[in-house]
Amino acid sequence: MQAVAPPVDMRTVMLAVLAVLQPLWLALPSFLAIAMATSTRSQELSLSRLELEPTSLAAFVRRKAAVLHRHRDQARTSRERMGPLLAWLWLGRHDLARAELNAATRASAVPTSDDDAWLLIQHYWTLRATRDHDALATAWPQLAAAAGRVAGGSTEGTKGPSYDGAVLRLQGLACAGLLAAASGDERLQTTFDLRARALLDQLEASYWSPTDGCFADAATGGTPVSLFACSIGMLTTTADRTERHARLGLRQRGGGSSGTSDVEATLVALAQFDGARATALEALLADPSESPTRAGLAIDAVLFATTGLRMATGPGIDEAWVRLRPFVPSASDRLVVRGLMHDGWTCDLSCDRSGEETVGRYTLHSQRPGCSWRQLVVHQDRRTFVAAAIDGEAIELRSMAVAREDLLAPPTSSRSR
Image (cartoon, rainbow, N blue to C red; front, side, top):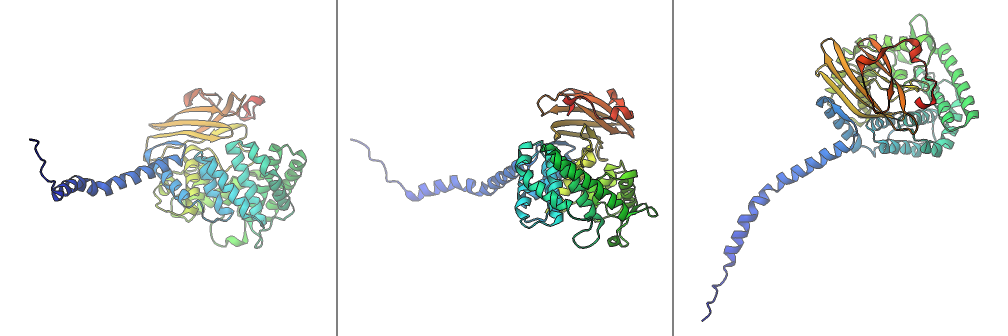
């Protein structure tokens, strides 16, 4: 006789199931938190293609890049796009840099003279960083029209006489000449170069004060002189007047030792002219600001201050070589930056502080077909070193020659271009 199974007690079954599921349910918030943190961490890493040491530097860049990415759809003025654009160029995210340029183009349906100048400058920075001539060819008709409007204006700003406005237009037109050259438009290159020269003469005649040793602007009043020219890489004036102007501005700001509202521009000027940048760098690295307007400027300032490579560069500056001014942050004995892209080259650098000296190692990788070497210039420990960097071969600082003026002349071989 076959045995009959006892009836199933559903209450007992349900209690058993709940006993199994309860620990999983209680652990669900932790699992979700871990998943969200992992996703956020993955996104932060994907925002940068640089490898950075020390960890404080890497964390700073990740944090600021995340701020930029969260606010990437925020409406910006032409000037406010400077920071995000430079940051994405530094971090190797050329797609996001291109998105900033495209947004600037769409936003300038009725551009002002300032908008036109910014568009030219930012396209020049992007060309130097990416060497994307196809993108330039697509944009060139609009850029040529913008340059024509800038060339037809004066050195006065839209709201009256302004030194910064004059600098912006001069830099914009100088960039237009190089963009025209890269586009193969020799006629417009000549036109824009001649007009830029005229604007430079007007700038110096209108604003230079021999008595004060700076470019005077009635709008500055009793505030420190503007560091705007240095911040956008406009260094082309006669008799080192831009440097003298910037050094005065740094003295007025206490050399970066005191609090200043334009700490990013101050750090850039200190790094540009080999000033004592440790205090300003530490202050910016510790800055907790979540401002999307300042985040990109902060990335640009910190990476320029630590590597010496200039992303916000000007026409004709360092076009024939890679120039570095490595600086190891005070709280660390080591600086490592890998994957730094500019002018068709990728640069890896490492610097270790050893007593009073810094031991450096540099490797350049060519991204340009047929280009097998590049002149490397390194400013370190108050000396300047040069070497012909062969594609993919590491160079030790101790093996580099101390620079002579003839060694810094543009190389004659087209292969270094």
